[in-house]
Length: 85
Image (cartoon, rainbow, N blue to C red; front, side, top):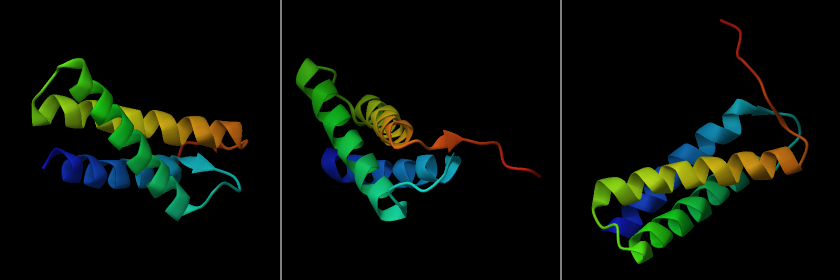
């Protein structure tokens, strides 16, 4: 149950973090995969540290997904930009 929640949250958050970055990056599929990877890694680390609960592990999984996607984007030379309304 936890793993499915982490995968879903990681996919959504990774896609969203990839949309915030501009430039020629890895593309939406790779952003989603990096988000899933970050979410699963973050969820497992929190679970291994002893903090149970679906809400706490999913929250940390979302934060880890954002961090991994943004970090990989910055390494590739992408920037965060504000959308014009």
